[in-house]
Amino acid sequence: MATTNDLKNGMTLKLDGGELWNVVEFQHVKPGKGGAFVRTKLKNVTSGKVVDKTFNAGTKVETANVDRREMQYLYNDGDSFVFMDTQTYDQVSVSNDIVGKSADYLLESAVVTVAVHEGNPLYIELPAAVEMEISQTDPGVQGDRSTGGTKPATLETGAVIQVPLFVTTGERVKVDTRTGDYLGRVS
Image (tube, rainbow, N blue to C red; front, side, top):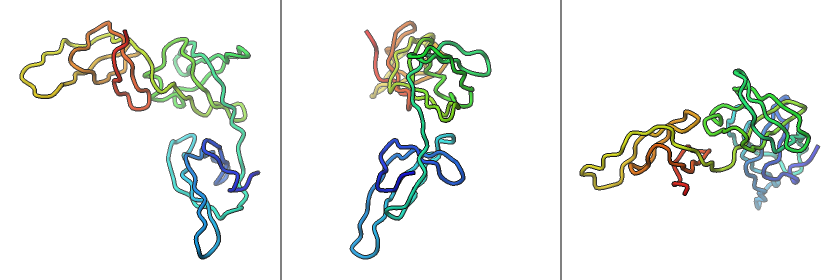
């Protein structure tokens, strides 16, 4: 148990009958009239839903012990992704539902952060950007455009992103894992 005065960004709280919520941001407010309160923005760990919640200052909230470990992605066995803890070498299976869209940017032997609560994987965090190879893209034809255009390109994982017209098949590019945006070529 902690009080609302102890809140920090990234802390995980257990609210509303056991649901886990990450503190995205918080703000202590002391108005001239009335009692102080804490305004928070919380993100549901399982659904990703973000809500605003206000607590009275000093209110007790239950914290959840979430263990964040660095793990290496090994392989996909069809209905789950298998990761290996880089310190203990234990293997953990994470279901396709939990990995979700992150699978588009997950290459074998990539190191990611896996959050575990009471032995159950909650979510995975990819690095902000990854380097991937373009497996297929059509040649770009500039034409008489006044601004730079884009075209679809398929990455080695099968994900499709938009790239500038000058990018060709076989090139390595940097991709933002949060938005799927092209960030640049890798030499």
